[in-house]
Length: 299
Ligand SMILES: [Fe+2]
Image (cartoon, rainbow, N blue to C red; front, side, top):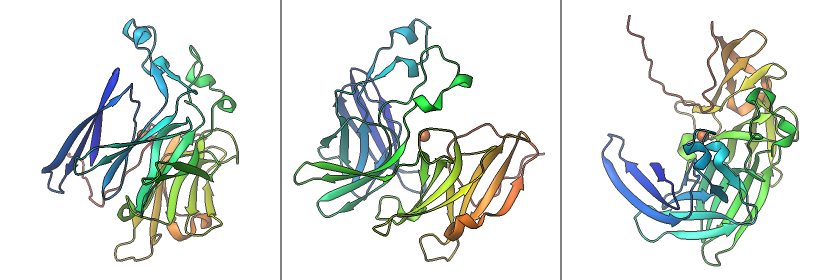
């Protein structure tokens, strides 16, 4: 499943579903009112889920060459965040509202009776640097922290409730690929080493959401290591949801090199079981992915 957004005064959400062989199975286009800054979607067996952040977009400075697109976006704290459920069969979309917040990435979603549960990394407002500020001078204290929130969307009453699952600043959540769109227990994410406030990601956090008291494990590469998105790789033939490995690419600032750290997912606090030290640094790709295929460079 994938999507594309055509943003304007009103916006179009195009969703696509492909079979594993690449055949297009479904394609739907839905129009929604207002400008849409939608970076990610979540899926369940019956829905594609999008959040419309409460922002306004004034493209004039960008069109005149004075700024990039990001600087033309302003957070509107007086408007709600809208949650759209787009039925995958193409039927009428549903729209719900919750208090204003800003979301780039969803962790997962699933259906439970009359509810749809959506877990997302949420900011109190649009995390952006001051205009004309160099990215080298970012004051992280002034940026909102990304927290993991759980939204419960009740399709019968139309109400949305929400709770914070993790207040430590985190980004780039991931999970067992077979649990995407289904109820799940374990979530992995990049996180800050410090317990509060925004900062660069220097830690992998594993959350056990299967108990009332959320249990967490952490693997830190601070003070000079910086992480991207952790990727969970299931152990072939394994059955437990966390039976496998967590892969994370780390930038090691003190030697200006990158390394791939491999953790046992069931015990990430035990430290890396292997580190693949690369003879160069890899510019941040932010997101991560894994394939068991080996690509041999042409000689
Ligand atoms: Fe992203």
